Amino acid sequence: MLDAVVLAGGPHDAIARLQPGAPNKAFVEIDGITLVGRVLAALRGSSHIRRIVAVAPLAQRHHPALTLVDDLRPDGVHITESLRNGLRDLAPDADALVVASDLPVLTPAAVDDFAQRVLALDADIAYGCVEKTAHLRRYPAVPHTWAHMRDGTFCGGGIVGMKPRVLPLLERFIERLGAARKHPFKLASLFGWDMLARYAVRRLTIAHAEARAEHLLGARARAAISPYPETAVNVDRVTDVELARRLVTPSV
Image 1 (cartoon, rainbow, N blue to C red):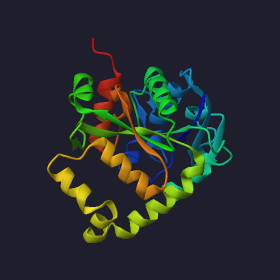
Image 2: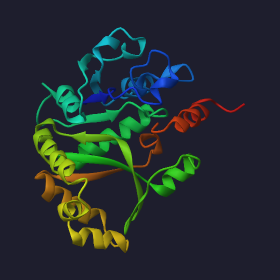
Image 3: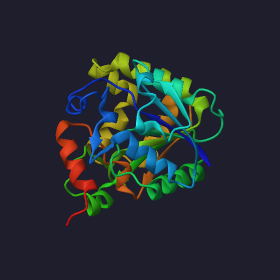
């Protein structure tokens, strides 16, 4: 059994403005059910989830969408602050799931499978991803940014497994990434020119990427490749809202 932290904070963006009263996109309804409500229902239906912590604006504490959570904690200005609040007091060496709140088609079966993979990997950080053919088989109309690796073509997912004790290491890396983001040379140097060259000619393997991530973080990092594309279907743009509504509404 794992604990799950659902990140339901964030700005009042263009997606949130589609829903009167929504503080952020997590509280936008998709076919009458909020995005965060759909994610919480999938987690609660999983046989592998013990406790659910939601990180969201405290003003939403009485929102019907949050009735499935065991604990509500305030979101922060930055994602690292929200992560810190969500992971606080969780067992430092036990695997936990950090879950995005904008996964409209997430299912208990997908959560079960991902949880099993995280436990089997026994990594400090297990980054969720989905292979392109598995995604296209189910959701060919859903766009993604794809990473072309020697092992295949992948997109990032909306679930990460991590041991809470590695959060300070992750925060340190995020700070380095933020400092380099406007300087291409520094950014390339951070990841390594050899890595960029391998990626450019599609010779970068998952094992290479895992080893570099482990070196950068100082923690054991692994890719958790899910066969469930539901873990990677998210709502990032206004146009994704209508697409999500079509995905959750059974065809007649």
